[in-house]
Image (cartoon, rainbow, N blue to C red; front, side, top):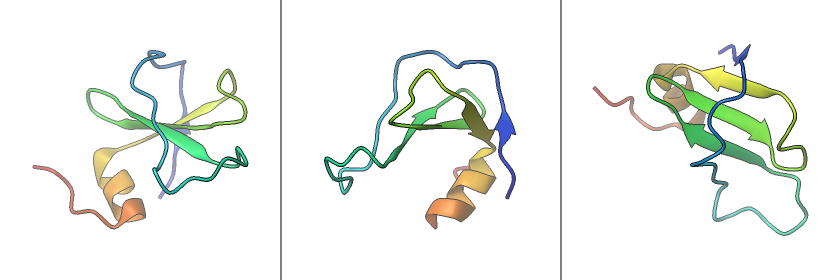
Length: 66
């Protein structure tokens, strides 16, 4: 599963897991039109990885949406 660096997606819609602690060592995800963006929560202005929905579903263990 490979992510690709991407131009900065919209700043809205970022979220992190409800299981994340307060240490700040988390990633945040944002659904895009045809992909999922992932960034480091400690560096929100830093690089963003973009995954296809199928790759994100494989990573999270969720079945891909049709």
